[in-house]
View (cartoon, rainbow, N blue to C red):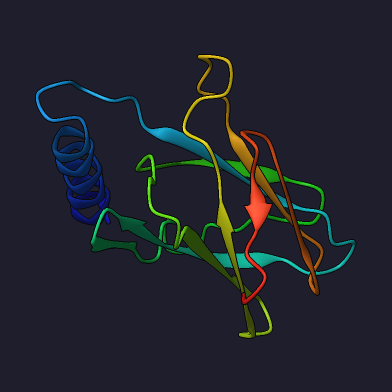
Amino acid sequence: MKRVKLITILLIALSLITLGGCNIVAAKRLIVSNTSSSVTITGVQVRQYVGSRVISFEDMMDAGETIAPGESKTFHIAPSTSARGTELTVEYASFSCKSVGFTYDYQVNHINSPVTVSCDGTDFTVSGSNAVILLDS
């Protein structure tokens, strides 16, 4: 599992360097918040469009790790610049999956604040960094 995290970090670093040319760009923080009263999140996957490329971060949580009702977890993702946005998929303990597509601004007023995606087991809401849910998600 440590190898998966290392590969994920290396992919993020590579994408950040590619996006910024020679400049190092700080990763975007993504906070996944479980607002359900009874459903546990057991998996988080992210798919981002960075320029014309797709970057996928599958299974961002360690084996056995969960996000219990009322809890949140922070992940680091590439600063997406594509209008196609970012897709987040959460897997629940019942083995069902829900996905949402959204866009966000890397910086708002020169501040790289996190994007929060709240999941209630049925619907998603997004906030921070001018995040907006895509209509076709």
